[in-house]
Length: 96
Image 1: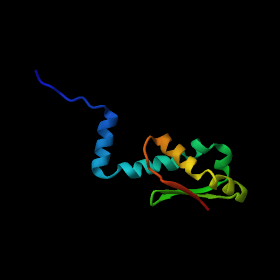
Image 2: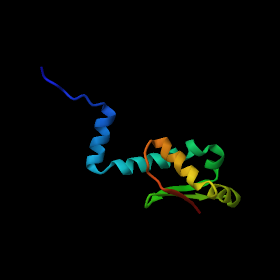
Image 3: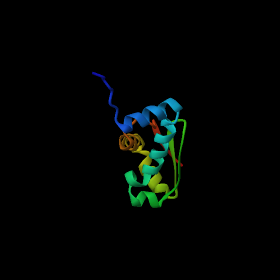
Image 4: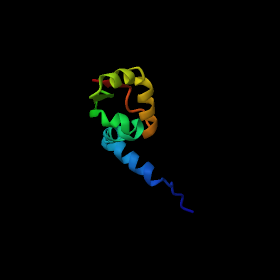
């Protein structure tokens, strides 16, 4: 009898992306795209720019009071975004 190792398509794709060095950029892209969904419409309206640099999510906001409130929750926000993509991608969130 021939034994075969069955692998799900998702696992095969992630292994390929990891081998090609594309897993991290894909997860970073998913984090940036998840910002409006995770944070909601109200915060998204005040968001001008979102990008990742050196495993930190940088978010430009147009409202100073909102920026102050979110700065107090930066670690919790990072945990929520990491949980949303199912992997540890960002270590912190910086607001400017």
